[in-house]
Image (tube, rainbow, N blue to C red; front, side):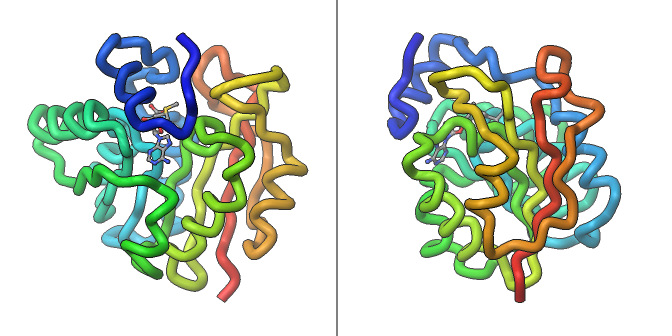
Length: 200
Ligand SMILES: C[S@@+](CC[C@H](N)C(=O)[O-])C[C@H]1O[C@@H](n2cnc3c(N)ncnc32)[C@H](O)[C@@H]1O
């Protein structure tokens, strides 16, 4: 099924029809590992963007973070509530457009978790995405991310090169940008693991 990447209704339809091949049913291993490195202290406020069914949000909550999980698809939000009920873990599912985060949550977060949101949006809107993320982070805050560099045309998921990440996140210090070693099967060697710090 093709999709208009900017349409909440389009993404929601994918959830309704269970056409969610991106969803591996668990937190991406590199992100679970990055959280466990405690680059952000436990108890810090973390936003998960394009959070889907909330696997990363649950993992961050499990690891002791205060989590807001943003998605504009109502079915994703519903699935997050199910995950909360099933696990007893606690986080805030937020039905909202990621591009508004800097207005609704200015300088609110210590870290943003990026997993398959950047590759899901229209590449023409990537600068606006970075503006929203920057504005929602406190100065010195971190992006912990996985960027999908599959090298294929079209999308979503849209390809993301190292050069693209370096150019778009120009106001961040690149503390790490390297190939993830523990990606999901099928994405091995195709993901950039990133630790980016917003300059104060
Ligand atoms: C490819 S899915 C990835 C979901 C999740 N990160 C995962 O890996 O399972 C992309 C998600 O981003 C959400 N999304 C796309 N654009 C968005 C936007 N502008 N604001 C909020 N959510 C958005 C979609 O609804 C969808 O749940």
